[in-house]
Image (cartoon, rainbow, N blue to C red; front, side, top):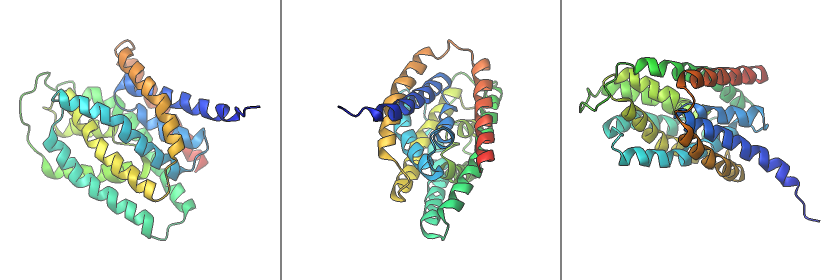
Length: 265
C-alpha cells in the first residue's frame, strides 16, 4: 500500500503558503510578515530555520514583483543603492556574528523571538500609517527628489539587521519609512523601490542562513507551491476588499502573532 501520510503534513503548509501569498497579493506589503511567526508558532519550526527559510522564500517571491516594477519604471535606483549600502554590509556583519561568536542555539532562538515581538507590531503600525503618510504624495512623477543620503543609508543599516534577524521589515516598515524620508515620491515608486531593495537583502540574508544550516529546502518548495497561486489570485482580487478594512485586520493579526511569540519566549 502506498504511504500517503506525508499528505497530511504537506497540505497544511501549502495552505499556509497560499494564505500568506493571498494576503501579499491583496495588500501589496505587510502580509509576508506573517510567514515566520506562522512557521514558529503553528508548525513548530525553530526560529532560526523559520527565519532562514522565509528569507529565501521572500527573495524568490519578490523577484517577479521587482522586475515588474522595474519594467514599469517604478524603481528609484539611487534610493535602492543608498539603502543597500547600509543594509547589505549590516546583514553580512550580523551573519558573521551568528557564525563566529559563541552564541548557543537556545540563546539565538530567544533573541529571534524577541526581535519578532518588536518587529511585528512595528510592521502593523507601519501598515496603518502608510496611507496617512502618502496622502500628500504626488500622483505624477515630478522627477528627482532630494537624495537624503545619510538618513537613507542609516535606515538601511537598521533594516539590514532587523530583516536578517527576524525576516520582517523589508515590506511594510521599509516602504513606510521611505514615505517619511521621501514625501514627494509617488506611492508607486515608493513601493517599487522598497521591493527592489528587498530582493538583494533577503537573498543575502537567506543565503547566509543557508550557509549556517538554517534553511529547510523541502519546506521552501512546499511554501512556494502554495504561495505563488495565492499571490496571483490576491493580485487579481486586489481592490475588491477595501484597504481601510484589510490594513487594520492585518495589523491585529501581526500584533496577535507577536503576543503568541512573547508568551512562548
